[in-house]
Length: 267
Length: 282
Image (cartoon, rainbow over all chains, first blue to last red; front, side, top):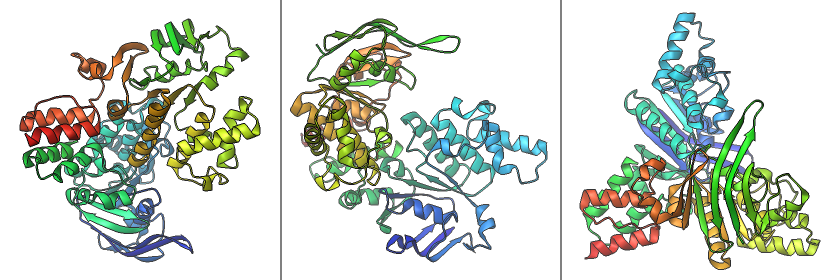
């Protein structure tokens, strides 16, 4: 479980990027953190993995408070995949990239090979182990990045805009993989995004605006607040917007409205 | 006039082998009132195709005629003026911003096409107002504004050259849904008020459905379909194109199956909403 209490962060004195943020994330859940550019969502994710130290407030992950002493232990629990697939591919080949994080764990060559194969299979990249990054699509590169994080056996995975540079096919690949990680491997998933249709697949949404939480709840509850979302520069996707417009009209058959909701939740 | 392709092929020259990026393309694009989407998988030749439209690439075989002028077989200076006639907005055009101020950046194009300083400034201001860049931003650095604003400044730089035809290579890629909607509204406005032909490469079938009139589908460098979008989406072998259906049509198919609402294609948001209200009021 992650418990964030009264978290504030400032990059400089005049400007608070996060203001008194309180968040609880249950083990095994999938939470999306939404917000426009500059809303503080990436700052929050960087605080959660200990890349930034909060100005005020506390972060407790599985009973451990985030501080210098606990950081090495916390890093074993929580991993992050970033937006640009090209900036996080460190190996020469897929195999080397997955191996990167394993290299200082004193594994025997057999164990190493076994682990690489195992995680490559989990993300469906076992046939690409010898490929170089330029031979892979964006979606494939992100899958390798996820395999690298999985190889560290962390329980919590943060995906910071991990689909925003991908084409529709690549996005769909990653969406399916996230569902699998969450449902079959019971990983806690935190997705940082400004894409509401993607966020709609998670269990719970947290909406940030100018460093503060303005909305929190299930996708269904949050998406009703169209005006508040718009004021945070978030635009409802086609199907959700249609759902809201029809739900508002009392003459429209409720069965149609429900069928439309079902359409939106399957994506 | 407009743009004509007659049996055009283009091969990239590799170290040992040449590979065909597009082959045997024949097209006729009118100078006004067209809104064309070019779709197809990554590597299908979309970008290669549009780069012929303003002579950035010259055909290996076949003929390309742009506003009455046939592209020469070899690069020469004389084709430069076509870049003013056909304005091409590249992918992530904001990467090409470079001037000290936003206004100077937008003026760069018209100045290159022999406008005086005053003319260029006038054209730049007009273009800035079309894309919704406020006067208060003119003297700011183009690197200190949001990604969506940077994209609009880059588009204004092309509009300031007053092209007859506007070619857009994935104009909304990487923008958030709000930025996407705002930018598309600008292109729609330009198309409707100035009747300019707009040619847009995209992967987003929702944009095709909402805005385009005609669709060109490329598959491995050849023309797989060229016609009205209605015919594409109702094509009996649509699945052979390996394209996604637009959300509007997916919703209609879902509603027909689940609650028996008759499937009647609606391509844009407003008409889909109206249709669903109508059928449910009956």
